[in-house]
Length: 148
Image (cartoon, rainbow, N blue to C red; front, side, top):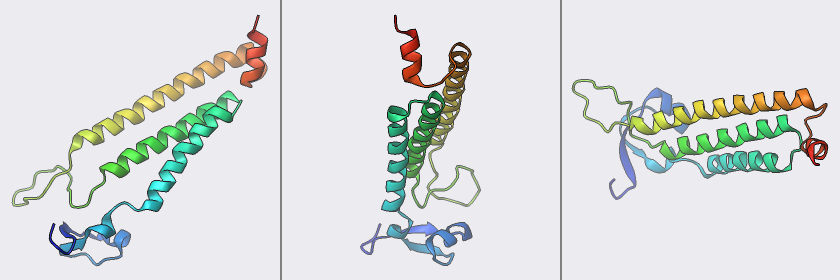
């Protein structure tokens, strides 16, 4: 990074609509490509809404949906943290000497998505089992009917 705060980046047409800059090979201002605080606030709000939904909602289906919203927010946060300008897909091409993105965090995020999906499916099966025994999915009603 030089004294002007610019970093060498290959600006493609995909990035040009996002940044508003014309595609060039050279220096691009890193502050333009950095994650925006509004995006961070939206992701934090998504996680917070999911967490509040898990605590306050009484319906088991709504609790399952709130858990999925919170999981989506956490995954979006990891993607936001891992997103850095100037990194390329790890595909080797002769004559291209650039910094490659680490594929391990991408694999971890894909694994987190699959695990979240399987946990949601398991929770829905549990809700289906409870709905067979109870006419309602309200947690307080279920607790009252099964309390000795």
